[in-house]
Image (tube, rainbow, N blue to C red; front, top):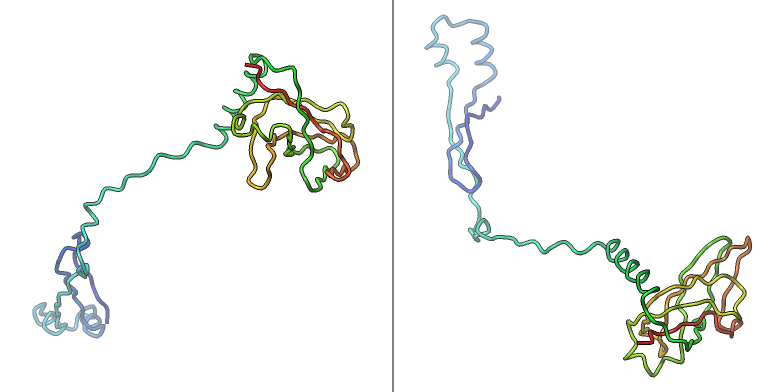
Length: 203
């Protein structure tokens, strides 16, 4: 047997009749073979039968169709924040009156491996500013390479003073560059001299 679906265009959740009409394959074959000359007799022999099946009704009406979903605004792209921050640092390098006094910055505990011809941003600690961290956190500073440090290049520039959750000392992020073809290992146990110096805003 086969089932023929006739009309059904109502939306979900609305009661509607769906008429299902079916007949036997034997009856269809007889109609096609023309064994009945009288159409009425053919229709009677086919014995069409109609039944109605309602669409399923939702279990409950929770008013979901009346709820308006408000989407939060998209967050700012990290790339845009970084570009804005970089522009601020570049502009500050020439406009700020930097203090003449320099503070030494040292490697943090642990070992850092710089591969050949690579750069890496490293956190260096500034112990001399520990007692002023609440006042200076987030402030701009000018970082310069320390003359005593010769193991690799330190790229100077303007950055911010930050506070770590695991250390008592404030730190700044400095970019180290290894222009050689050999791996350089930096450890606070072997490198006891300052690796960079920083100066505060004189104003």
